[in-house]
Amino acid sequence: MPLATGIHGNQGKALVGSSTIAQLTGWTADIDLGIVTYVAVSGAPWQRAVRGNKKASGTIKGKYDPNTPIEAVINTDSLIAVVLYHNASQRWISMTVLIGKITYAAEIDGQPGTIQEWTATFESDGTVTMV
Image (cartoon, rainbow, N blue to C red; front, side, top):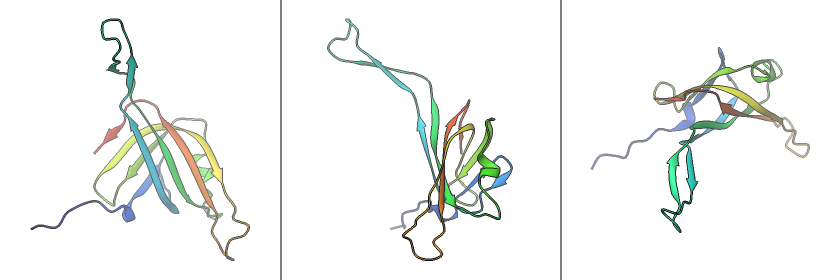
């Protein structure tokens, strides 16, 4: 029996604009296919469902490096291209986004030398390509 195959995310990466996020620790992408529900006399009491607007949203997270500060890449009011890779060369998601929120964290009670984290949320603008 052949072994099950899958994609391990330990080689995943994120390209934001023209910059690879070197201290990336993970990302999430929610692809919403857009369902709109309603109830009409013709189908009452059961709801109906139709396709609405599609969108993507998610989070990019990493460790803070003062030598390459993340805000220099993602702190923008403009649309920015994002490509999220599952692994080094295969599956990826490409989209244009607006960065929504950048969150910084400091663990005061952490071990000495604990590297601080950041997260950034995004919302898509236009078509999302998944390969």
